[in-house]
Image (cartoon, rainbow, N blue to C red; front, side):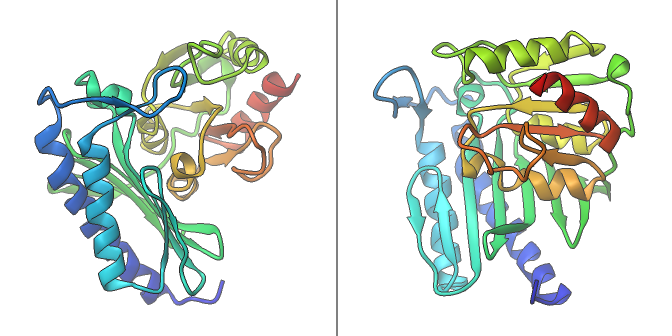
Length: 271
């Protein structure tokens, strides 16, 4: 890495402004009965004006302030930059939750240097919660309260709290039959499981409220912001083979509160 701590701190301040701008687009549209469109040729992949307008505003701010930076987002694809910096955007992660009025959707903003995420931000506007990780540390803000993030420290599967967005196999859910079976094996070893939280679950893991989050079928914009937050809070996040997130074509992730819990989870996922 060849950038300075003040430089990345400056980008963190800018990322918070991006998140604030996204809030101005998403919050007025939440629980407003807005129109929902389907992006999928088959099945259901919802998108709304909240998704599109939040990303549009963020892109405009980046282009004005850092015109040499690249941008990749869920709704409008990739704009290549002229240097090593690239922003990765998911304006509404959890659009299904958004259109059902459930406040577990988030705005995800990541900054990559030479395709490696160095900054991650997870924002839940309705509950006014924000997690941001930079320089190897994760911070949480709720209103005027700010504090460092630390995972639970749990390393025993038998007392772990696990989450995935949808445990059903395709086409109803996101994952393949064998992945659904592997998750079921792992979840059967844990104390309790909760579902349908999308990226919000990773924020709760960084907060110490969940211990394991396991997913598949994710895209780059879904997970780029997650790794800095999980790791900045002391957790571990890889794909199901124990490699860097994004190393596989299936978009598999397993995030854990501790290295020991992560290792135990991998045995059930790959066994």
